[in-house]
Image (cartoon, rainbow, N blue to C red):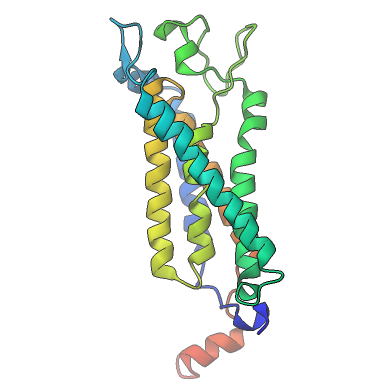
Length: 247
């Protein structure tokens, strides 16, 4: 059976919500640059007596929740690539070729965009700032960067992207397994949030850095789904489902 024959019709996609919520969140983040929220939240995780962030040298946060967790997601991505390649040759996987391709593309884009953007924006990490025992000067996201010999590499949040990139699972599953897709969304959001908070505790990122990451990952995964998998019902299919009386 060909992949086209078993490809399901997509459930309606409300782009006003899918695009509107991230847009509103982005506007709020820009406005928050006028406040001290980022700095205030960072101070909650900073111990002025020790002169460091409370999680800076935590074995669990660094070795388990950062290094090992990232390796697990990387391993998942490798299996996704293997599955996609296998979908060209293995009969049972062929009907899911487009889904596997969408998953691989989403995972790749949602993680690979981070490093180039970090280089371009040169935003400093909290642990590098004078307010937290470092030597660098704080600057808002949209303001010019103070001169320094060590440009920052902290916006957006890389580790947060490791979790939020799994939004891809939600989109890949939404047409075939909607209930499982909702669980995948909750899992991705929860994992990204845990990764975000853990890095905030270490002084690696401000709150807004991670929210921006979630927005970017969502939009990337949404775009991949829309152009690769989204297949809205045709007018004929809609009439068949609703019947002529309700058309």
